[in-house]
Image (cartoon, rainbow, N blue to C red):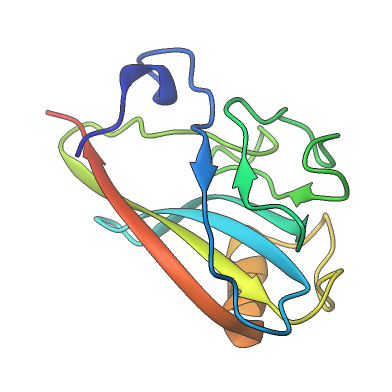
Length: 140
């Protein structure tokens, strides 16, 4: 489907609610990565989501360490200014993917709040026990 306007720069630009289930044995934490697959650009990353969580609420606070989910951390978004989610804002039709990673360590080692989106994503891919993706598109 397509992104609802409220989750894009044409609306309130708030993060959508996401849910997941069936984490593999050994999962210690989760992360969610939003990527613009049309240009291979990581938009945002939230990691160190506790393994007891099975969702992200809509409109996660745009701060480095949001209070919910407790203990989670967020990179700078693709604008290199905003912490956390920045939704689609393309000049034409682009395709996007939310990826949820189940990881075997919490906190995730080798990354900090100073790490780039690509560095955190690489650490997640390397440490993933499993992942799942959801695709969407936005633009004219």
